[in-house]
Image 1: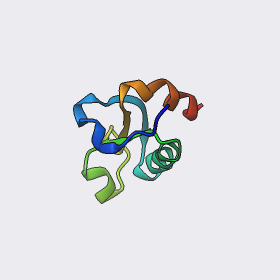
Image 2: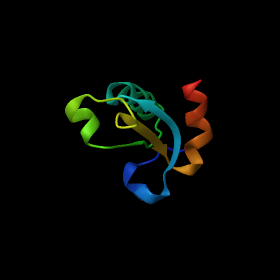
Image 3: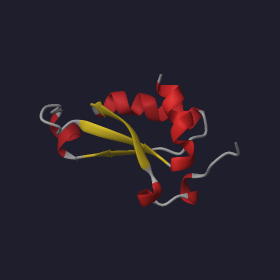
Image 4: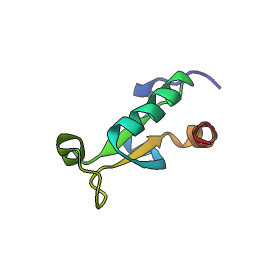
Length: 78
């Protein structure tokens, strides 16, 4: 698969492949995907990182990739 550039995709093209609680944990997945040349976005509410809250979905981080990378990214999660 060719290397993908972040700018090749629009935000709305991305699909959620995994959800974690806490931005630090999400950053670990992001680094893993970037090392595999998979474009990745982290989607989260700004309140969680500011106050460190991870209750009631506030600290939820959705890890998103372009659809054509979804299967490869899911394999890296396992």
